[in-house]
Image (cartoon, rainbow, N blue to C red; front, side, top):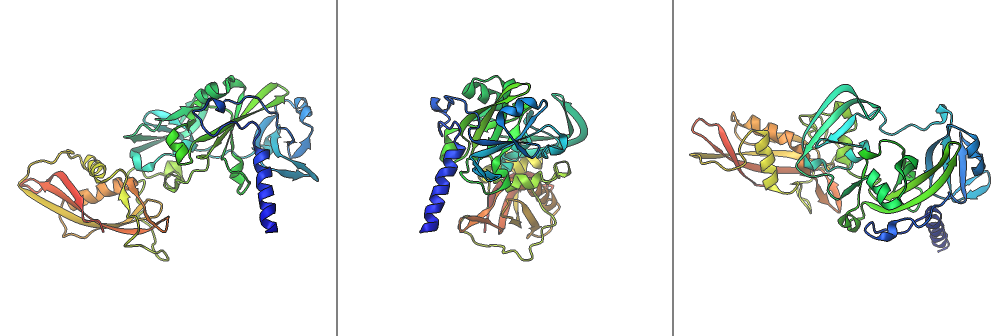
Length: 395
């Protein structure tokens, strides 16, 4: 009981300390506009690893913000509500996550390396890449990756410059963004968030009501002021439940971005199932994203076939099985039907569209599962496939 009371006290203190200028968890509410600007009250200012007086920061030209620790901390025997880290010597600069990533484009628009890892891989149509260096808005990128999807991945999202203008009324050139999760206590190092201080247009955030119901998207906006030697800057804290993404499929696809297999980005040919349980029956079966009709359409497109069923004198089918991993990746694809010339084209199409699969669920968690299915198709008198008819036989 004593430990429980201590935990509650710590929780309350953490919530109070992290709420610099927290006004609303409802992005549609006018109350999301911060009514005042904080100044990191009772925060430690740390420059090049040393605690300094906050007012003395103006004496250090060229200082840059490293990150913000928005949780209670004790330094040199003194308690603080949090800490703000700076550097003016490069060897104190923190490593920048995804700094060596290529430029990412989705449906022709550049997105950040964070956004690319938030996207539904299931919606991908194609991925292409180039390893040529490219300069965009003054920044050098080692190559570029282009993704095409059927969906408008920017629907119900707001670009960072628009968010700053709409919810803070601050000029973007005076803003530094601190993007963090809405966790109320420190657990992992990346809980403290990341700093965005340039290339704002490639960042976007969900402001959808639906996302609020699923506990995703921007929950609140906070603002603090810092007086640098070069003048005043505003730190806009974007408190976002989507900051710590859980889309492991996207992380797998882009674990080594320029090595991504553009033909089969979600098919693993080297999966070793030893030591893993492969479920044959689960509470929720593995299934194609948005159903069989979309899946059949994508298979048809990959094979250069019409999405419409064509008249033919003969129908046939192929039975296949494969493993849908808990990440949503596919592996162990094989035909269970007698060998035919057309089998190879269908198996290739399944591999190309492996991204569309959602994993099976057992005990409220994704698991590896075995899928068996039949694809029915129409053939002409010469034996060529003219159209895919339907999918059935899931087991």
